[in-house]
Image 1 (cartoon, one colour):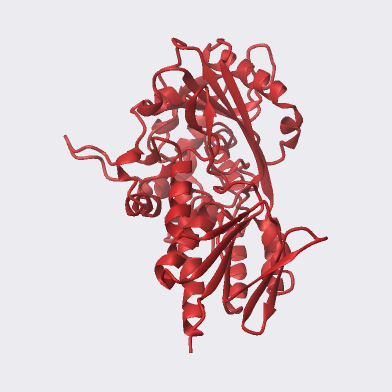
Image 2: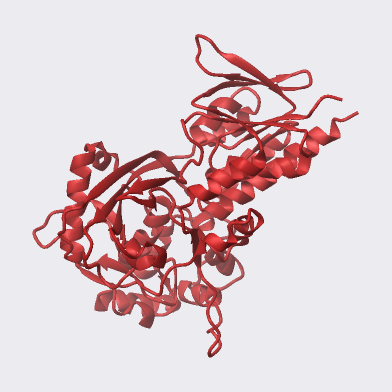
Amino acid sequence: MRALRVAVVGGGISGLAAAHRLRHLLGPAAEITVVEQADRLGGKLRTAEVGGRAYDVGAEAFLHRRPEAAELVAELGLGDRLAHPSRAAASIHAGGATRPVPAHTLMGVPASAEAVRHVLSPEGVRRVAAEPDLPPIRLDGGDVAVGALLTERFGPEVADRLVGPLLGGVYAGRTDHLGLRATMPQLATALDSGVGSLLAAVATTMPAPPQPRVPRPPVFGTLRDGLSTLVDRLAEVAGARVRLGLPVRALTRVEHGWRLEIGSAAAPEHLDVDGVVLAVPAPAARKLLADVAPAASRRYGEVELASMAVVALALPPGTELPERSGVLIAEGERDAGGTPFTAKAFTFSSRKWDHLAGEPVLVRGSVGRHGEAHLLQRDDDELVAAVRHDLARLAGVTAAPVDAVVTRWGGGLPQYGVGHLDLVRDVEDAVAGVPGLAVAGATLHGVGIPACIATGDAAAARVASHVLGQIR
């Protein structure tokens, strides 16, 4: 009997998680091929050398309270490299001032007026306090833009000063375009249950107060040597044949499975397999599914993307950073001279992570929200200069870096717009009707590392079930 053959298109965390799970499900004899258009594996997980130190210039951490990433780290024998943030608190720059990110909020949506009193104007606080007196919210099963709902219930300040910066940090998006159900599912669930106000809905999502002398579980985790460690270990244990620098140009059904057309149009090569996992961004999925799952292709084509850049700075030994883990910057904020800030956030990594303390001092600035492509059209030197200007105005840090690395993520973040959950359901329903094919990736059920791993696991299970069922 010939060996089972499976292809994974896309070598990011979703595709590598799928390859790893396929190896477990199909056994050591299966031929698993990972095809990646870029010249490296990892997708948005990338660890670079900055100032002589390993430093993540893509995703920097994963949500530890969601189990998939933490469990995978343990499964791969990397548990001794796990690190959690220090106790340094995050801050937010809004309304011309930098203040701590308020507690008792859900992505910035408050559970009470008191929780956000130090961030909003007196009128903004009054609007929040009066929100429960408004007519009850009724979604009736539908979705709504986060910004529209917040403005209707609270006025503009909660969206502009709190939720916008927080969601912008996750999705590089804007509240006016992001849908409630995909970005704040807990809040939507509470409203669906009959809770009529936003304050009350958020209050139902708040965790119970910690017990005295009982340490709180960590919210985030990362790996001390960088998240590329996870990429490398996944590739090692999956035992897949890795093909880098090769686009997949076409995907075709053949008699006993699938044929992939790989490489240049002038001299393509073909790979015949029993099953395929597509773990690629929406534009690539749209193209590859156009003939084999046209309904899914059309829905993928509706997904908008945001681009961003990470500017990593290694600052001289002795550089003093604020006693904070970082600062989020509200859209439209300007410095004292009236110049708009270029960065949307800074992470003071040498404060946030104990393993990154020491020399040189590490800071990363993030640039780019949906619709801000013009900010990214500057060359690297200009971006570094703009980010340094912002760092000086926001944090008083003026030291010239000993090293700077700019990493651009063009189209790196899918936008979870109004009705995104319906779009994903339509994609998955359409693909479910095609034997031996499954999809994974950040477009589907979350942009974070655990959510991407979950889609890879699910896609692997679907494809493995099909190909094992074909054994005669």
